[in-house]
Length: 306
Image (cartoon, rainbow, N blue to C red):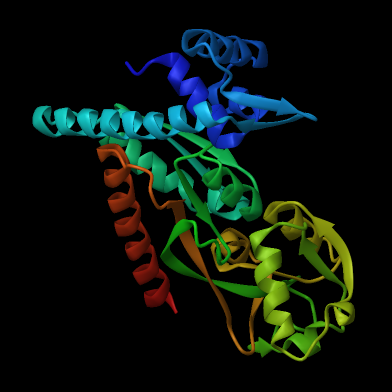
């Protein structure tokens, strides 16, 4: 219902990139450029300065951007008000999740939500924590779910549950019979870690810094891009690692891996991340409430099992 050209302009102005705007809007870059030129022709002035492969808003562009923000906020409020009256819950939500959460937490959560709210269209983008925070900040996604602390004051961060990380080893490993292990003791063995930008890696490295062990002392033998590949490498006897307890339940049941608690324990938050000023639709509110309840149940189950 909202004017398509204004949507295109608003997205380009938010991201300050025709390429990123085209990706976010699922359009070609020439189509985005054409829409912007039509708006500039309509106002008979330039809305963007284009210099040295960079773009910035002109004074006129800044005025249009301010009004566009208000227009889209009122438009969302109008849709929300009508849906409240009619009892209709629909719309689209674009989520982003870091790899561990996308693989082990969201499938069941989103499946249960979708079965209850069939008319809500859910889209999911998966990358590491660093990428998710960037997408939230640039308005590419509506809501991010990440596995590392977020220290961005422009974003609203809400912890949804606490996750515990544990050492994983092959069942015949010398540490497998231990109830706990220190980071200094772990540094004696080949260590397999996640890639740069991973929330799991960031949390582990911060933990190491508090345990009087330097990064150089950690005997890193491999860097891999997913929990599944790390579990496979540990099972093959290539080294030890630290992973979320959420990711290893199947392997522990099958006996292909053993887990050992760190001393002191290592925990981290799983958090929702969203823009502070962005208007939230009723569908988004329902999803957040649903996710909070789901995380609370999971937390109780985890606590009860220990």
